[in-house]
Length: 489
Image (cartoon, one colour):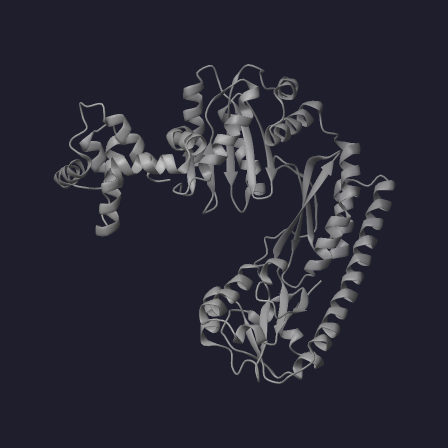
C-alpha cells in the first residue's frame, strides 16, 4: 500500500516541519510513498527498494564536497525513491545548489523542512497508516481468493472465476497463455485512455502455464489489484490443471530451456531434447532477447519462430527472453533467415537481440546461448539484432587472452592509429576496421562510411603511414585486422 507524496505532506506530524517543495518535478505530489525512512548515512541508497520518503537532518551532507552531495542525490534517484526531505537549520543552513541541480536533472523531488520536528513522529504516523492499509488490502485480497475458490468448487469456468476477481478489484481481468492466446476474460480491458496493467505469472506444477493481466483504470486501487492477483494464482492454476493440463511435450520444452539456461550436463539435454521435439544431433542456434518488455515479446517471437524454423522453444526470465531454434538441413541459410526475420520484428526501443553460433546437436545449445549473451555484453554492441558469429574474434580474445596480452598486441600493431584518434578526434581506427571487414574493398567501405572515395583514400594513406605501410600482399594483413577488432575491447 502507499499514500501520495502530497497527502503525506498534509499529515500533522509532517506539516509541523513547514515542508516546501524546492524543485519542479512533474507530478511530484502524485508520487506514491511506500514507506518513510530517516537516515544520515550517505551510502544509504543500496539499502532502499524504491518508493521511500527519505528524511535527513543534513549533518553528514554539510561536511562533504558539492560533488559528493550531487552524487548522493543521483544515487537516491537511481533507486527510485519518492522524495528526499532535508531539514535546514544549524547543520545545513540551506539545501545546496549542486544538490538541487542534480535532483532537477534526475527528476527527484527535494523538500525543505524549515522547522525541526521529531522524525520518529513523522515515521510513526505515516508508516502506521501504511501498515494498517496493507493489512486491509491483504484481507480483501484473501476474500477475493476465497470467493474464487467457492466459484471453482461449484464448477465455475475460467471466465466466471475472472469475473469474481474483476468484481472484487474493479479491474478488467484476462488470462493469457504463454503463446499469447486469451484463455478467459472478464470486465473492461484497457481500451481506456490511461490506466495501467498489472501482470502476474500463473504456474502449473512449476511450469509457466499462463499470465494474469489486470487492467486497472486511473482511479483504481493498484495495491488491491496486485495483492488480489497474487492471491488468485493458486486458484487459477488449479482451474487450468483441471481444464487444460500441459502436455508432456510442452513440459519437456520448458524443462529443456531451463536446463540449457543453467548449463546442465549433456546427458540431460539429450533426454529432454527429443522429448520436446528437438533432434538430438540436429543443428541449433540460441536467441537472447534483452528488453524491458521481454515477457510480452514471447508471443510474437514464438509466432515468428514457428514460421521460420522447423521447431523452437522459449523461456522468459525477468528482462530476458531466451529461445532455441532447430535449424534445417542447410543450417547456414536457416540461420541467415532467422537473423533477417528477427530484424524485421517490431521490438521496443532499446531492445538488444543476439543470435548465437550454430551448435551441432542439442548438447551444444548452452554454448550457443553463452556466446549470444557474451555478444550482448561487448561494450560496443548497440541495441538491435546482432550476429554472435560476427564477433567471434572479440569473443575468443575476451575468453582466451589476458587483458595485458591483448592490449600489448593492439598497441604494437595499431597503437599509433588509436593515439592519432585520441589526439585529433579522428576516426582512423573505425575507417581501418570497416575497410578490412569489407575485404579491403575501397568502394564498399566508402559507402558504409558515407565518404567520397578520394576522402577514404586520404584516410587510408594516413593509416598506412602510421602502421608501417600498405598491408595488402603482406603477412601483416590478418594480424592488423585482428588488432583493429580487438582495439574496440
